[in-house]
Amino acid sequence: MEFVRGTGGDLQGQRLINQGSGWFMGFSPKPENYGNVFRRLSDVRTLYGSPLQAPTVFYKDNDATPYQYPDDLQ
Image (cartoon, rainbow, N blue to C red; front, side, top):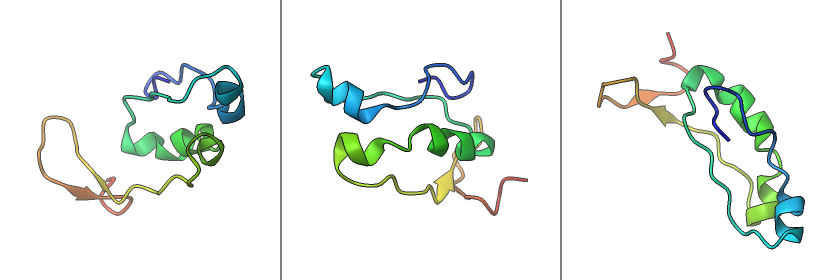
């Protein structure tokens, strides 16, 4: 899934398992899109056996400062 563009559909963990796949790759999440990203990854528990943890830190473009999610989104 490419999160910035919204491409790649939703994670379908059981389908990946049934097809013999054991991994998944998603990239380019932006903090302002985390709600959509996590909705699309709702089947993570099926694929990996554990729930997805909410992010607590994010980095802005070209900035190595760790920011707190969601408090520092502005």
